[in-house]
Image (cartoon, rainbow over all chains, first blue to last red; front, top):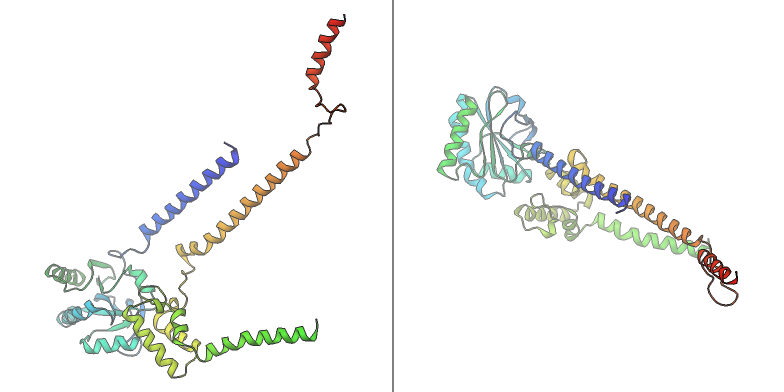
Amino acid sequence: MSVALRVGQVAAVALVASLLGLLAWKLANGEGRRATGPAPGFALERLDREGTLSLASLRGKAVVVNFWASWCGPCRDEAAVLDDAWQKYRGRGLVVVGVAVRDFSEDSRRFARKYGMTYPIVKANGNRVERQYGITGVPETFFVDRQGNLVGDPIAGPVDASEEIEQRFEASIEAALA
Amino acid sequence: MSTRLLAALGLLVLGLAAPASASEERPTLAELESETVCPVCGSTVDQSNAPVADRMRAFMRARIVAGDTKSEIKRQLVAEFGPRVVEPAPPKRGFDLLAWLLPGAGLAVAAVAVGVAATRWSRRREGDDSAPAVEPAKNGKAPLDADLERRLDEELARFEA
């Protein structure tokens, strides 16, 4: 076998191996759902009033970050549960923040009014904040403690999908408030 | 260049520019659907049946009726959904930069490989062409191998001796 052919084969194998390595690195370090560590920060346009809301401004409070959309059926069901949690725990320093993704602003506002979302709602900026949290669909819910770290169990799907998930939801709120 | 040719070229340019201008000023829903991307499924809006794609179609229809240009409608969609709604290409940063670099790098490597192979083939052909041609024998027969001819002379000399 000629030297050139051998060199070509080695180069091809090395290229494939390096691409596989890059893929493995990305999967290990990139955009899977975040569960621990510092919560990715954001400063997003508010839909319930003028101005923006940043996660950094909520340092010292426990935060439930809920990703939703007006076209999402399960989001309608869980809106009441999230609002109940906001009313129940706000006295202890909990803030629920609804992040509207991939939606018209007016549709998001109309949905919030219709389903009684009285907690702050903000508009996602393209899909950047979704990538930062590693979400793959809606609804998804994350829990941030008073120091700005992700705690508890992020929930993919509605927070009232089952009794077990509701228990996880409550437990994660308590972990964030601790 | 003749005047007629210049005039013909001018008409051709105008002929091509006119439809583009009309499309910008008075876009059709079909055009916009094929040039925008569903933010949920990633396909063009005309191929998506996601609820948000239905909302986008309704929005585009309303803006067309209101007289917005194609650029204005796209700008409003970008304000709502981000730039990926009109530019579905991968972002040019981080790992996704490879999606931009690898095709070009692959083409460059392929071009170099083809160039090297072509050079070698042409050199091999030149090498074959430069080998000395065998002179045909004058009696019509092929000439003897030199070593064979020497051995034959030696054998014949023994008989003569």
